Image (tube, rainbow, N blue to C red; front, side):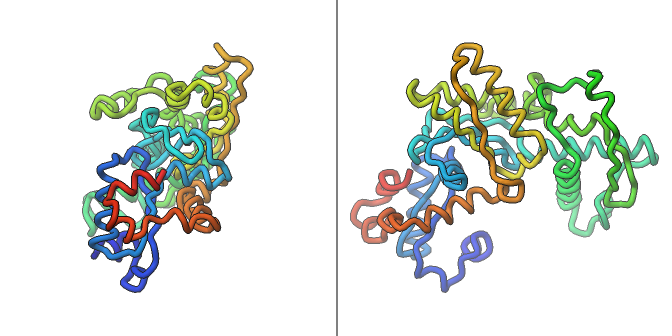
Length: 326
């Protein structure tokens, strides 16, 4: 099918090997059973293992118990994982992810460019209203433009951001060259996009949460603590000592340090003895942490027993996936 060949990159010659399929942590058991049906019956794979993204992201840093903060494009998901199994009742999601921060940074670049040059910044080789591939392509290129700037010059403030603080006002502006050749100087504006994740009040985040009742409007540090405290009491301390950060949206300098400080500030108000430790792969590896973790999982010598084979599927039905796949 087109989905297998173009979407997953599995050609006809790959169907004689079992498939490791990584899905989002919030996927329902019904959706997992449907995945098994499609892959084993329709596509003809001899075996299947359906893994949660948070679980394999734990494996990417060598852990099986952690609370995973996945800053993806469209949202940020916080997932507790205990001994390789997702605590499904404690998974929390925010509507703010990397794309919202990238759009915010593009807005900042436009404001600086208008102030200095009289016109907004443009993606290289693309004009608004004139893109051959349409308006959606133009918006995508703008988001990518914001992402590149956020990753190169964006920062997350150490503990709270206030543009009027003397510490921020004395920052030396950093020159940044835009794709269309314009050059701007970025000062305290470099902190604004990161505050969409951590700021205690954020109109953008509240608006996103209002549009979807399944999303939380709280900042990411609140999601981490709320998620951990939904787990059993004897699991909470272990989870807080392994906070794993993954996802391309997390590739902003200072994010892991700020997350640690904010979570400690909440936790230590009632349990001052608990340690908080944040683990994160290097920036390039965070984007593909689930792929790295999946490759580690599949390379384990004992993993061969974990595959759901076609014979097991035929004997037990799709429910076998919920029993064998964490």
